[in-house]
Length: 298
Ligand SMILES: Nc1nc2c(ncn2[C@@H]2O[C@H](COP(=O)(O)OP(=O)(O)OP(=O)(O)O)[C@@H](O)[C@H]2O)c(=O)[nH]1
Image (tube, rainbow, N blue to C red):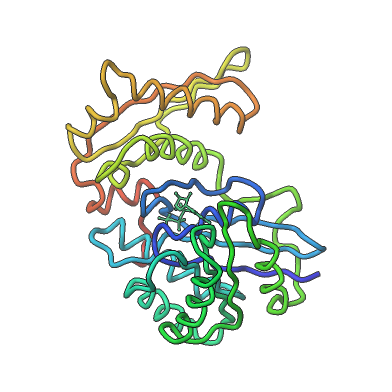
């Protein structure tokens, strides 16, 4: 068998998580239309044709404005050094930008690792535009071992990704058991479910200002387990928005999140959500550490 680790990198919002989920056929990473949705590296595991492909979905690489952003970019850049193949994802419907060049420079630092360029979102492009884009890529960014155009959202051209990776995988071992499709611990998946429900309902700074923490789980062998979860925001005004008019928004978030968590755990639960203000938490090392958004070497 062949196996290997494949980093999925690119600017924020280009569709890295959508692509990873589609490749693995499971929802391993939350997706939203807000840049900066993914904050940590997440492994999505695919067993196919006797091979094991371990995709590492990473946070969008960007010029950081605070410690959290620094951590996110560090996580992505670090992953480049730990893989057999790098997949650089672009939003084909947008101009190639200095942000993309910044990502390319980081990839070039990984030296000889094979690189595949993914032109995503071709559902928004004409055939002519795709042709022009592919020519422009090598001119503006440099050379790639393969260029693959696809639409992750609409599952167009997904098989080409596997075809492009296969020549670069080496004989190896099965790193993960066959029934495992992510390495994310359940408590983290639960937090991400809650975060996703808020991201889809908010805009501007709020999606970036949210952190989620499970503060208590009460196990009840003869009844429903009770989960208490904190939603941290940076300002009082944000707290008001998340709670909503007469608590409407928090209620909606709670109902939707509870349903997804129940499906994940295969049992009914009670879910209590609490909104707390932690001023400027994205710039505070101890809090970031507590939330798992900071590593010792950073
Ligand atoms: N039209 C179109 N939209 C897509 C496609 N793939 C992803 N999207 C949308 O693009 C947005 C961003 O997708 P994500 O998968 O969260 O992007 P990401 O690169 O992981 O984003 P970050 O976590 O910010 O780095 C979402 O609204 C997706 O639905 C595609 O093939 N076509």
